[in-house]
Amino acid sequence: MSLLKVLPGYMQEAAQDAADHGAETSGAMPMEEIPDFIQHHIGDATEIEFAGGHWSLEALAIDPIHLGPLTIDLSPTRQLVVMLVVALLMLAIFIPLATAFRKRGKEKAPRGFGNAMEAMILYFRDEVVRTNIGHGADAFTPFILTLFFFILGMNLIGLTPLGITPTANWSVTGALALVAFIVIEVSGFAALGPAGYARTIFFLPPGVPVFMKPPMLAILSVVEFLGKLTKPIALSVRLLANMTAGHTLILAIMGMIFVLQSYLMGVASVGMASVLMILELFIAFLQAYIFAMLTSVFIGLIRHAH
Image (cartoon, rainbow, N blue to C red; front, side, top):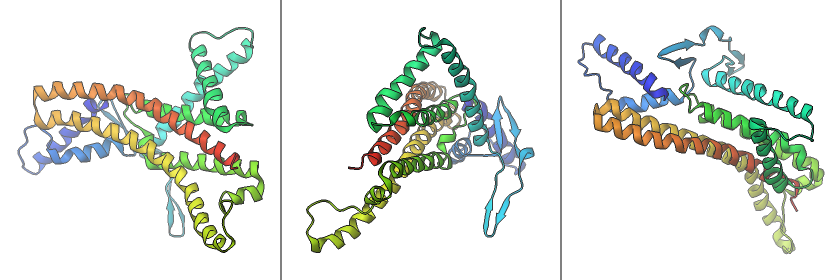
């Protein structure tokens, strides 16, 4: 795990700082420094830590863009680099796979990895996309599959010794949820038309008395509009919270080894962290699946608003 590589270096820096100030140190990490280390490990930065070393991204920095009071910094960070790596891996895997499927045709069944990927893709198409969206669902299958595999790749790469998880950053999960929100609303507008889409906001249940229609319309319109906004917020927060919580718990447990300096605590921490890593592997798949499935559900709900 990346903690075992990064944490000793972090402790050496803390010990050096203490020595520079004339303080005595026993090599143990103070308890109050664990939150700082966890934040440093989970948060974004302009350097990548690996194999006990650091790779600075400052050489790739881009001058900020100033738009009045707004400053936009497009300089690459380690989470952006990991996202690009995941995207390139997805292209490297699926483009040759798609090419092989085209050459093979429908006569021969794929083998090995190709067979497993075809089974997963068909499952998503039949059980997730078609089941939740209904008529015209196949047009959304590529988008839903892209969401699933891209999120899964970012989740899994956080379990490698690199230890960088972009989905533990609200900017990343928020951007994914925003893209899903745009697709949901545009698909609803295309399916329902302007008048039908307006009724998804300005809603009145049948049978309301005439004198109650104005206040009910005012109340329900606000509720329906807020309901649209809560969908992407729920998607982003759910993914963010699950990925952040698991990594935080594992880092806190492993950090206790260096705080207590105990062999017993070392054995117990490694055992608990190993179990949690297995659970994190399951959560990585589960959260990617939930994000893709709920996006399909929301698309189906707005396309069939009646």
